[in-house]
Every structure is written in structure tokens, then in C-alpha cells.
Figure 1 (cartoon, protein in one colour):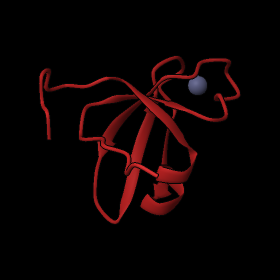
Figure 2 (tube, rainbow, N blue to C red):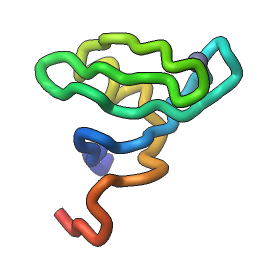
Figure 3 (tube, protein in one colour):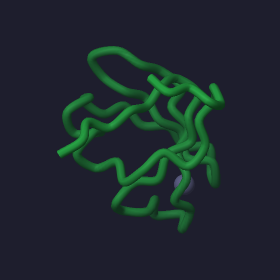
Length: 69
Ligand SMILES: [Zn+2]
């Protein structure tokens, strides 16, 4: 399976939507853990990278356009 690509500032869609009904999360911190912020309610949550990669469905908007890496 292809490894998911994401970077700081990306807007991603998760497999489960946020309780507020929105399903767009912005990556606001990258490290061993990933901090994502709900675009709908601005609530942020810190999750381990492995769990994030598992739960992330796809990148909706990438900050750097045309990045082929
Ligand atoms: Zn929310």
C-alpha cells in the first residue's frame, strides 16, 4: 500500500468525522506526534503519527502545490 504523504499546513480528511460534523483537519504540528485542528470548530488534538496515518483518509488541500515528492 502506498505511503501517505502529508506535511505541515495540509488540510486532511479523516476516516471518522469530528463530532462537530466537520471532516477537515489542518495539520498544525508535525513530530513524533501530529497535532491536527478541526477546521469547523477549531478544536485541536494531538495523536501519535502511526495512528494519524491509519486514520487519515486523504489530503484534501496541500500547502505546497505541484509538489511531486
Ligand atoms: Zn470539530
